[in-house]
Amino acid sequence: MKNILIVGGTGMVGEALQKLLNAKHYRVGILTRSRNSPRVGIKYFQWNPGENYVDPEAIKFADIIVNLSGENVAGGRWTEKRKKAISQSRVQSNEILIEACATEKKWPEVYLSAGGMNYYGDRGDELLSESSGKGKTGFLPDSCALWESAVRQWEEYEVRTAQFRMGIVLSNKAGALPKLAMSIPWGIAPYFGHGRQWVSWIHVQDMASIFLHAIQNGQIRGIYNAASPDPRTNKEFMKILLKKMSRKALILSVPSWALEIILGEMSETVLSSVKLDISNIQNSGFKFKYPTLPRALDQLFDEKQ
Image (cartoon, rainbow, N blue to C red; front, side, top):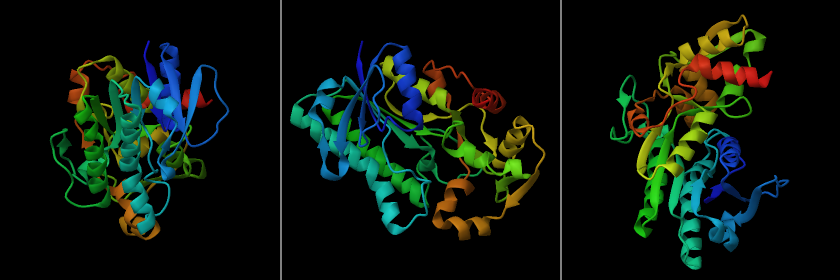
C-alpha cells in the first residue's frame, strides 16, 4: 500500500482526506507547521516554508503527495501584503517541495494539488469547461493561473500530476457553510447582490473522494473541475439552506455596493458567477455520493445534530 503525504493536511479537506485514506488502509503522513496532537496511524513531519525547510524524512516517506496548502483566500481583507501572500503561498510550496525532492533525489509517483474555480473569473451563465480560459479581470484568476503554472513544473520530472479547480467546499465544521447559515437563526437569510450568480459547490467528502479517485486512477492527469453536478444561483442556494434549517427568515439582498465597502476587492469571491462543467471528472468514472444540494445539506445537518 502506498504512502500518502498530505501537505496542509490539517485543514477542512485534509481532515476528510485523512479519514478516507485511513479507512482504505493507506499509510498517511502530514506535512505541517504546527505540532498537533498525533493521531493513531498518522505520521507527522515538520516544514517551515518561510525558511525553505522540509523534513527530509517526509520526502523519503512520500510515494504520493497531495498539496492542499496555501493562504486562505477568504481569511481577511485583501491588503497588498495579503494579496501577495495569497498569490505566493501555493507557488512557494511547490518550489520548496520540488527543491526538497531534488535534494533527496526522490520523486513521488503522483502529485495532486488543490486549485480554485476562481481561475475563470466572473462569467455569468456560461457553462465553464476546463478549456474555457482564464478570466480576463480580477485578482483571483491571475493568482489561480500562477498556482497552476507552478504545479506543471512537476511534469518535467515525469511525475503524474493533476490539479482540481474546486468549487465551494461544504462542511459543517468550517468554510463557507457555517458563515452562510450564521444569520438565519436571527431571522435573516442574506444573498449577495442580485443573487443570480452561479455557485458551484461540492460536499467535503466528495472532494476527498476525488483526490482518492485520482490516486487510484492512473489516467487522471492535468486540470479538472471539481464540483457537484448541481450548481445553484446564490439566491436559490440560500432558499434551500433556509428550508433545510427549518427556520423562518427574511431572504434579503446584501447590495453589491455594500459588499464592496465591507469587503473591498475581496467582494469578488461572493459576487462572481462560476458555473462549472464537471463532465471530465464524471467521464473518468467518478461517482458523487452527494450530487444534489438538498442531499448534501441533509447529510451535513444530520451529522451536526
